[in-house]
Image 1 (tube, one colour):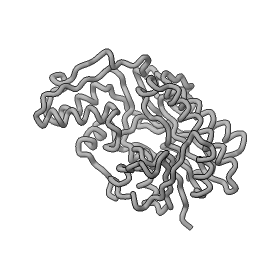
Image 2: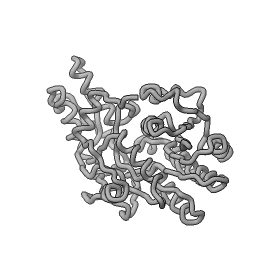
Image 3: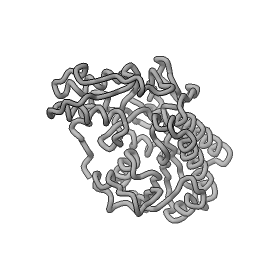
Length: 320
């Protein structure tokens, strides 16, 4: 008997890649969006799985809407990926960010608790919960120090999952994922902005790439690999939280240099640093320790920063 999965936030980068992955595993895949009729689902179409997914409208902030989505789909597994996903935007819309992430997570947890049949829940956490690790690699025991409204919301949601797991014996776990990129990233993300600018300049335009801080360091991975880790977490006998990362850190300047050098360009001739783009608080260093995931899930990253840049330039997508 085939398993059924409900992917909340299926129209985004991770949701689309996860849908593609689960369809390949033979799952019946349901997906949610706030407005199923008005959403284009272009990411699902790009990956060739639009006709393989059943779509529902669901507002994560409305408990009745969440509960009805679960009742309709009757999933064995739920992947909660919905909510505002931009750290930068969270400074402009703090209330909306915190509400969409924390209330959405709470509603899904409560709906899972009330379901007649047991369901396994994956919650999309974030490396932003750790804050600035000052050169140390964050693992599952590293204390949280969130430094943005987005990070505060994700940390709150993490503890909600932890509480429901302990109080109600739910199979619920959080993946603390570090930065992971793909061609499906929205245009507002800095990695997409960098690649698009490098491509445009190489084609002959005279534009300049305007960025904020270049000294920040991040742990960049490849999104299609990270969705497999989400699935592996729900295949275990007991629910546990996992850090998912490459374990390698590079500065944004290195990322920019790698992208421009691929087109035989010197990034310093084309990049302007703009202080007005600096965030009120930002992480100088972000690095993850994926040791537990490798040991207990058998998962490890195979694509690192240079691979990510190369893949983004080639606009590589998996075969449908």
